[in-house]
Length: 299
Image (cartoon, rainbow, N blue to C red; front, side):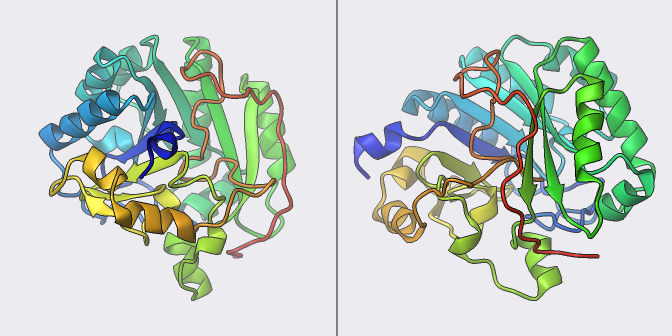
């Protein structure tokens, strides 16, 4: 892969666990309480973080599953911060251990979450987790109170979902960086729709601006493109994978970015730090924006 292509990579999604305490209808990784954490160890993740820093990629995103369920998240945050990387933790914010708040308050750290509606019943239907809305609201409010940079993505998943009201609720809670996306037909959303994942579901920035490492070490262009595996970091160093012919071939299969591509969804997005407080400083989003929506899942 040419050095100019590597220079375009802005961040790496680290799926530090496959396990999640929710089982959202549209989850792009089909995570749930029954999904295994994965075979990557703390040492494996630290080696990958070191590789990211050495490659000059400026940012990591800890994601899952639900990243707060990985017991080593605090140490991994510290390790990435010591490597002078920007950090985003993409959590469903339904349960935050008290000890994690101190890590989230580190200067390099941002938080992101998914939020669906202001209606508790709708929220529970989407997340398949009872009482999820109240817990997320409380933890968003706590993050804002602590001054932790925060953004949120809204995915339209079901018919008559109160999306506009969800955006208003987020602004009321103090979250101003909000984007709205359609369901992408990968993972559980593809299973629900009885379709196979396809490159048409991708925004075009994966492989070009994004890298993802799965809980078992598989490397792809983003969490949505896990069906396009370029290699495994337990078998090869990250640099070797990113410079491989396989990586170049997969990159070429992905259509170029579209104008309406890739706002945040349940998994994260292509610009994970939409706030000046988190390096690298991507364009800030001051209010909710909505592209044309094409539903992949209805319920």
